[in-house]
Amino acid sequence: MPTELPPTIDPVAARRWARRLLPSSAWLHEEVARRMEERLDLMTLQPKTWVHWEPLRGGMQAHALLQRRYRKSECFMLLEHAEHAQAAIKNVALPWWKPARWQGPVTQTKSPSAPVQMVWANMALHMASDPHAMIARWHALLDTGGFLMFSCLGPDTLRELRQLYSRMDWPAPSHEFTDMHDWGDMLVRAGFADPVMDMERITLTYDTPAALLHELRGLGRNLHVQRFAGLRARAWKKHLEATVHTQLAEESHAGRLALSFEVIYGHAFKPAPRIAMQAQSHVPLEDFKAALKKGKSTLASG
Image 1: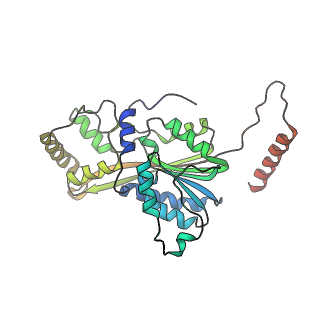
Image 2: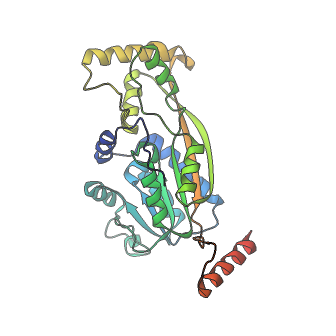
Image 3: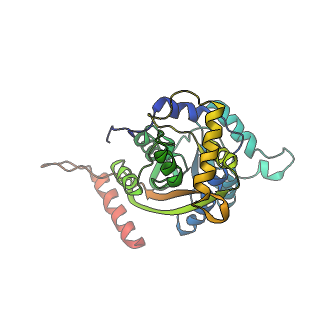
């Protein structure tokens, strides 16, 4: 596993953002999760247990969609911080008098005691200061044959704002986002098999610069190591809003302010571990039989 970290992400700023408790999931995160949930129609495996990675950020409305899809499956919501876990469980808790509260699997905010069949991670990877470690954790959570579903932002995100900042000779408005082919390579190096990556571009428009900046604050923070040092004054904020209004309105339709978001979707499976072979190897008979059985099962289902 490579040890290099994203060169433009400040790890301290990334940890600070991860600790922040948000009042609700961002609209774009919910929309991306809704589109990703539709892709589950292509998956034949019905997970008995699954993990929702950081659902407060990824989308609590999406969590409800996934619960309806997998009504008989047990879900584990994994959140790094205790206050986030408390908020998440309150969000999904049903009133005591509803029969559904006492029927079927329960959603828990803890790590599963056994590997699961699906890990769902929406819009988390592009904000990670150590994405290799995050992908490795997803791999460790999965059972053999289980699959990962994830999404994140790609390098064409905020193209208009990056161009504006460049023209003004300001530091970048955001850290750099990773290309989907690089994510695919990282998945393979982490032990995943058959990664499938694709992307789409979503354009959001806003009436005012204030609305645009408010949307961005809900999506994340600028984690770039060379971002503006310290806080900007109110006068600078007014200057920023005036510049956004002047330059982005000229490039958008009907005078509205437009921002592009490149959304990357990916899924991959956890394969059976390979038997390491040397010049002279001794493989237990039971392991050899299991490998043969796995191969026949794969051929039969192909």
